[in-house]
Length: 436
Ligand SMILES: [Zn+2]
Image 1 (cartoon, protein in one colour):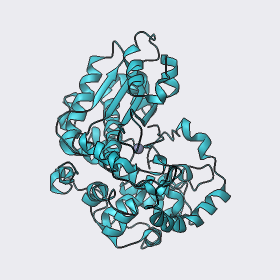
Image 2 (image 1 turned 90 degrees about the horizontal axis):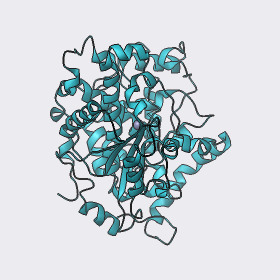
Image 3 (image 1 turned 135 degrees about the vertical axis):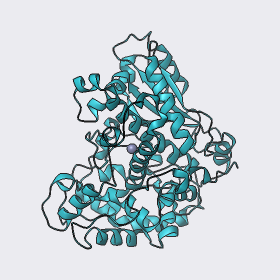
Image 4 (image 1 turned 120 degrees about the vertical axis):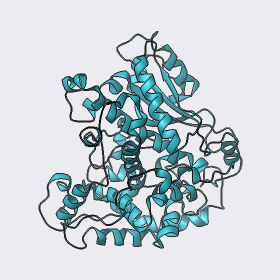
């Protein structure tokens, strides 16, 4: 999983590949002094953003709604559908079985999350000629990706990213048309399980279902980000959406964006793997259930991380954790959370299942993105609505939770999404879109 400017990925508890976004690496070099001062400024920034909202001026804070919102509503941008709307754009000679696999996986996801427009999965093959890659080069130009300047497959390879985005109009105006793009080399799909798992190429050749299991999880993860973004509408999902005025976005933090997506991908696969014909003949217990690219809800990770934070041995998932860990405003942005000097302990990701124990997975996955557009404080307004906690109280309570009880304790009830159909506990089609 690569990261993106608009919607980011990776940073997951068991993601074997740190995969920092190449386009963000220079921006991630933030000193500890800068980080500290930004922390001190956060609360006053938030108060300021409320008073600024109604003082829109050129170059000033964005006042959401209006013509940009009307445009997005007119194209059903946040309206879930069961039609197949994902677009797979490929080079000439793309393997037909990969297309079928892509279609089966996304058809299954659509039945759970719903299908949303403007999602483009674009696959090139850097081993092939520009002529053979012409369909994807043309499509990237049509989508105004990188200003439509990519001319060769080498240019495309330089800009590979998943999930990233583009806009064929002008963002936050009546012409806006935001698009999510996953741009990957065929080799990444063919050997996904080698790059992002621990399987050798030989193992994957002999047991291709292992690669496909990881690829299915990847597809579900990235598509979930598109769903999250769809409900942020013209505000934008996170800090990356408007770095000059980040509080005008819904300001979703990485621990929720990634934690909710990782928990979803695993719950979806467990419940729906039999939708995929490529998995015929496999089992869950001795097969797919043992394959993972990331997790935020594993009980053993919960124990290892808490053990290290409570002063016990730092091992396994807790290997980068110490009693010094505290969650705080530095976890609200990808660039501060992944800064070279940031605390490497992944405990902050557990705030997503922690939130589920306070509320429910329905709230984590659906109620929050349903509400965050309308709330003055966006994501954090939704947290306060469902937990009664303001941002600092949420941090304080989570930091206390990480240290409460015994390190050997099992996670609390509701930590993991429950087995069984999503409709029984998390109904994605209950999300009210403005076009309904
Ligand atoms: Zn992600």
